[in-house]
Image (cartoon, rainbow, N blue to C red; front, side, top):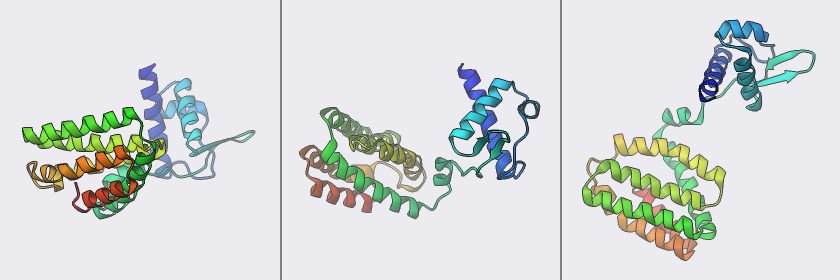
Length: 216
C-alpha cells in the first residue's frame, strides 16, 4: 500500500509539472485514462488516485459529460517557496506568527503543553552546556514548535512548522558559529516559558519581541 501510495504521488507530481510546463493547458481537457497510463507508464488505479488528489487540491476538475479539465496552474509548494524567499521577509512573517502563537499559548496552553515546552527548554540548556551547536538549534526549534502547538490553533502551528525549515537554515548558514548566541538568549527563553505558564500575555509578547530582535 505504501509503495502504491508513493507511486500515485509521483505521478501526481509529474502531472503538476506538465501543467506548469504548458503540456496541459488551463480550461482544456487532459488526455483519457488509457492515454495517461501509457504516458506515465502506470496502471489505471494509480492514474485515478493521482487525478483524485489533484482534483481535491483544486488543480483538476471533473465535469460530467466532458471529462477532466485543468482548473488552475499549480503553485509551488510552500516549503520550496520559503527556501527561495528573502530571509528578511521570512523573519517579518515569522515575527507575526510568533506573536500570535505566543498570545494564544498564554490562554490555551494545557499542562501537557507546558511539559513539552519545559522539556525542550531543558534540552536547549543541556545542548548549550555540551557546546553542541546542532543540538542547540534542534532544541531551540523544538521549544518554539512546542509553543506553537500550545496555541491550540492547528493551522497556525502547521504553518509555523513550515517556517522551521528556513529557521533551521538560518542557524546552519547565517548564525554565528558556536553556541554563544544560544547561551546569551537562554534567560529570555526561560522568561518566555514562565510568562506562558503564568498566562501573562504582555510579558510573553514583550519577551518574544526581544528574542526576535536578536534573531534567537
